[in-house]
Image 1 (cartoon, rainbow, N blue to C red):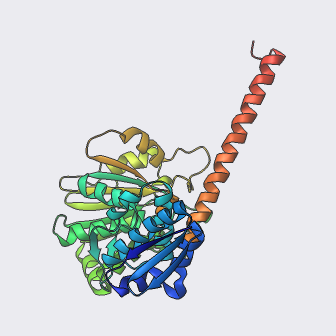
Image 2 (tube, one colour):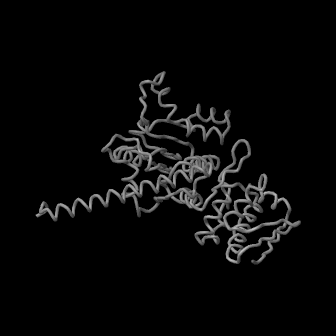
Image 3 (tube, one colour):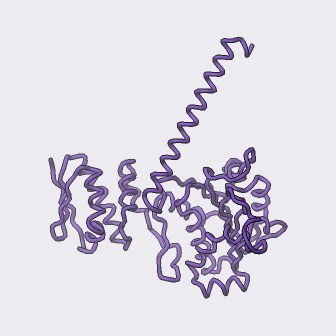
Length: 340
């Protein structure tokens, strides 16, 4: 049993670290089987040597985030613990290193994980960025934040948000109204993100002026999009033809972000996803970046990350069983003389 002391500059950082009802510090104590006690501006960590070392690394990393003005949440704590577990504690200082934009309510939009930081940097440094990952990893929201930042800095004159209007087990025809009314629900997540960042008045003003366009992917055909920041969301539901059509719309001074989750394809059986094909076709091309986010980059409720991880494990098990069944059948056919 040993004890290590962590000195803290301000008491506010300790309050931030401990969280409501000490929920953050309890997660660290449970993870590493240590005891953490606060004495003024000191934190005393006691336990087995290796556990204390890891707990100290996690605590110091979280205090570093607190010193930069970050609100420490259980999601932050669990993510930092996962980085320490993977031996990546030296990269924790890269988290939340820059503000992408500020919403109308004054909220700072930042990358909250290393994967998100790589994604944001790729958007800033490339003409086309493909972001692939599960729900909750911030693919769409961060892309919209980058679009708003580029628009405010006059790097582009227009923001275009689009997605394929693919039916996920429901029929468009049953929705009331004309075509625009029918596709609005499909585009609502995109317009909500812009609404959050611009505010209602500015959003509607830019919409009326044509500086913001939210439309189904089919409306992009035949156009050349210059000086625009274009976001194609839910790209896993595009066909290869639609994806090629979209990519060839990009004009001078434009930037495009393509987001999607290949585990949530709603295309009819037998149809190839345009996103899957694009990832394979575009790999290695200059000015095109492909970023893969995973369950560690989920910034929704921590249960979402656990659900995604559970489904990933389930899918891997299914693939292993299918491979075994295939090999077993192949061996049987050889023994039976069927493959001769």
